[in-house]
Image (cartoon, rainbow, N blue to C red; front, side):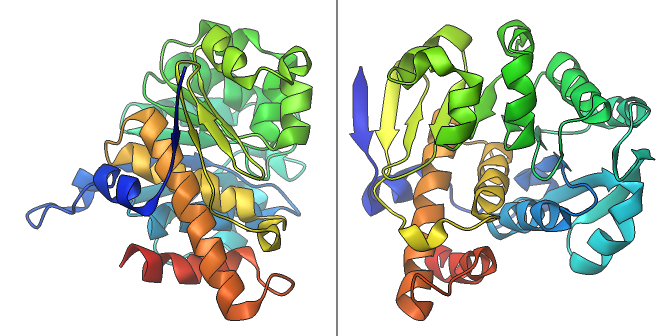
Length: 278
C-alpha cells in the first residue's frame, strides 16, 4: 500500500485555485443535516467549517425546534427547518430530505444528531437515494455501527470521520487494520487522532498537523464541514479528506500559537483558517 505524508507543498498542489469567472454555484451545493435540541453548536460549527473552506451554497437542515437558534447563529448558511420529534428529526423529515437531494453535490450527516428513529431514517434515505459523496460523522457513524448494511449497499462515495471510540463501535474487528476496513467497505476512512490516518484501503495519507488543544467538543464538526466543502469543489474523495485534515490541524496549530493549547476553542480554528488559506 502507498502511504504519503502530507505537507504544505502537497496541499498546495491539491487545493484548487478559485476561478475568477466562477459564481457561487461553481463551488458546490452542500446539504448538511445536523443538530438536535442541546446540540445546536455542532450544526453551526459544521456549517461554518464548510463556509470557511470555500463551499458555495451551504444548506443546513435542522429540527424545527432549533431552527430559530441556528438562523440567529448563522448569517451565510441557508438554514431550513425539518419535521421534529422531541427536539430531533422525525421520520417525516425524510420526504423533504429526499426532495432536496437531486439539487446537491455532497451531503453531510450526523453532527449533533443523536441516535433515534428519525435520524436513522434520514441516514437511510441519504445513503440509498443520493449518488454523490456523503460524509458521515459523529452519531451518523454510531448509527452505521448497527446498520453496516447501508454502507455495503451504497453505490456512491462515503467518507467516514470517526474518532477512535466511534471506530471501535463501528468496526471492532478492524481495530488493528483500519485500511482493510476501508477496502472491504469501499469507503474513505478518516481515523482522527495523533497523526490522523486517511485511507481508501489502497492508498493512505498520514497527517502530522494538529495538537492536543484541539481535543475539545466541536473540533470534529468543523473538520466534517471542511471535508464536505472540498468534495463539493471537485477534489477527489481521498484528497479532499486528506487536505481537509491537514488544513484543520494546521489551523489548530495557529490557534495554539496565538492562544495556547489550554484555552483554544473550535471557533478559534474558524478564525485562523482564513489566515491559513490566504
